Length: 365
Image 1 (cartoon, rainbow, N blue to C red):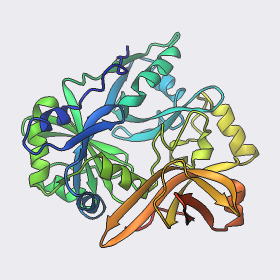
Image 2: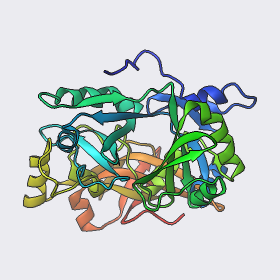
Image 3: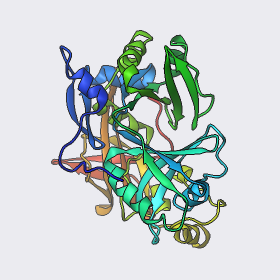
């Protein structure tokens, strides 16, 4: 049911096409696939994401259809968010847990009428598919991976993303976590509107035959091509964690502060007893938080200190050059007592110290 990606890192379809052109962007591995890292100066790409519209590769995503008469009941029992109550064109981000309530990965569930689909990063595909498959016992359920040689996904991110879609004559999903099916230039496209805190996030699933036309049309309509380096910096600025970087197997759902992935009245699911016990009996002892750094640029893994004692560590860091200024932001786990004291945290990068301020929401850029 799964494919072995350990031997060779495969190019995304867009990366394969762009590698053939003059002045091809540099490529690097990202989320389990080879994809463009940088098209232009980092500051220009960040500006497109934060202030305008940016087109980017999402070919590292994998989509899987869930089929069978028991699909709704079974999938609801495997993920932390609602499945049965999703609108006919809606979706929800989910964590996948083990019986001890520890996070095994994350995925997004999308509903199309009575059909269900899940989307995940390639670097999680084998592990999650094996985990899900293990719990298909007496259920009428089948997991059908979409053909990665027949379709791919392109992203459009930025506050002007909806304007780019409108210039192309494409429908704009009205709300985050909804989608629309669109016929465009003879192509059957699906446009998903995903979650974002500082900008709109759209995913356009296209047959592979339409990839070149779609990519060119996005550029013509005003979207700036950007690579993974800028995307990573922007997602840290948005405070959106990634499994395998900010979220890990040892983590409990409430430690991640990602309540948008949890539904407390949907019924039983794997790991739900632990989640409910934490909710009803008390808080966890650490949380994933966003920080703004005042001082030198730090690296992931840098310790967070309170009065000289370690109270956490950074998981992701980013430096954003925007409008002539530099912003340094981070995500990291910090112990609850450090938050309660509400005192400045410190860190050291090289031989230079800096301070880390906990943010209650993503900063305006």
